[in-house]
Amino acid sequence: MPQNYWTDNDPDKDLDPISSLLSEWTDPEDEEEEFRSDFFQGLSGRRQKAAFMLTVIWGVTIGLHLVSWGTWVIMALTTMVVIQFFRLVTAVAPPVPEPLSDQALADAPSVSLLVAAKNEEAVIGNLVNLLCNLDYPTDKYEVWIIDDYSTDKTPQILDNLAQQYPQLKVMHRAANAGGGKSGALNQVLPLIKGEIIGVFDADAKVSADLLRRVVPLFEAQEMGAVQVSKAIANASVNFWTKGQMAEMALDSYFQQKRIAIDGVGELRGNGQFVRRSALQRCGQWNEQTITDDLDLTMRLHLDNWKIGFLVEPVVEEEGVTSAIALWHQRNRWAEGGYQRYLDYWRLILHTPMGLKKKVDLFFFIVLQYLLPTAAIPDLLMTLTRHRVPLFSPVSGLALGLSCWGMYSGLKRIRKNEPLSFADLLTIAWQTLRGTFYMIHWFIVIPSVTARMSIRPKRLKWVKTVHEGTPEESFEF
Image (cartoon, rainbow, N blue to C red):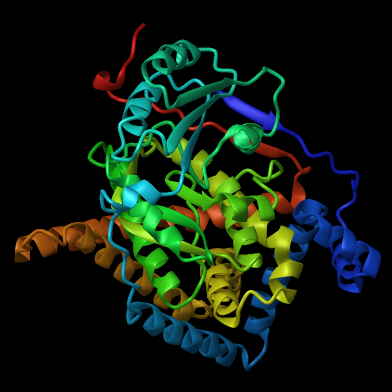
């Protein structure tokens, strides 16, 4: 499997989470000025921060088992989650602007579509054909493919397609070019002309009206970015791809709901659009993270931009088809998601990004990161003390919330179809299967948080292999 690696040298060899945290709390003015002058200064001490957080999670969990009022703390947390649950399910999504009319296209903003590609000969030709045939004036959008020193036929395919499509621009990176995907995107940024920048993975499949539907969302001046809903193109292959289909439906449902309550909308990499001025104000793409989309999400919100969400049309992508590939991919997602909280925790606490966003972030961190990590010491204390798991009320509620979101998301996919009782049973079965599939996160999250706490600091990105389909093969 092709891989890209880049290292972040860690001068601190000793694991000293307490002193690391205390040094940050002291926050001298000169250090704070240096931190705020560059968003990426927070990268220092990730391992120490992760170790400290792991220690706190285990210590608090064990401590709650040992005190008589521990149950009341969990019940209070459960009550707060219930309130958040009802806020989400009753939220009404804001109306979606009408697609651009033919008349409005004359004044439409320019758009640059970027794809960082490495060894993508199986899918890159199909994506270029789709992107170069969008229903948008050809003089108002351009397509940039950054070939990250591919060793297969990707460069040849791209050079031939560039002769066919005038709006297609190809950049070939050198072998020693660094920064992974973020480095590729940053390298082409000075050359593009678009006011709005779209980013796609090489396996993306888009509809012709995509830009007509995305661009109107940027009419709101506070809109810094928009994420398009994603779907799995090969969902019927096996259990893993069917699970990813349900997971995407769950994510899309709660993305829209979180934005509806003025919470945190998130970018998901493939099918993300960002206002160029917002990107530049936030420091471009971070080359010291393994999930550029999640990192940019946090920096946009810290800079008081909004992130919107477009349910339709969807961007399709290939789901990974094996447990091993899923494990590698989700470990990267989990580590990148956790990194952003370790990097920007001071700014999250002190930046006036809005109370509603901070509340939404709190529940998201608790349910997606802290609760799965606390499940391990909770289980150990349960077996030792022969009692019911202390976190079972909030864990059960989180499971119910996930089932509701997954069922609602899957049902929404078929909203234009008349659903029979048999169809509803099918969706219920897909939800049950998807919920069982989601158990892998309860293994991924604790293992990632533990590994980040003890291993030497090194950023590692493992490329997801895209196989494509026979009709997507290109020969020249």
